[in-house]
Length: 109
Image (cartoon, rainbow, N blue to C red):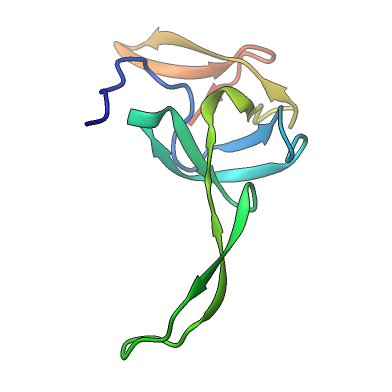
């Protein structure tokens, strides 16, 4: 049984991120899915592997590419203002917690 993550992650589905470590260092992409229990995220065109599928009655067989998860610590959010990687902070605005880019102070949607 996987241990539940109690850490609040700074990256959400739909964010633009840059890989800062590993084989895909410097690659930008959109977060497709966040796996909170494993502290990982699936990013488009990052950590791509080929999967061989046998044909079934529903679909044809063949080789398809899938995006494997990458650890959250290897990702950095892209600043919406400058387009550069930035750290993420949280602040309270009108009683709601919002994320902001530490470099520019710009709110991240």
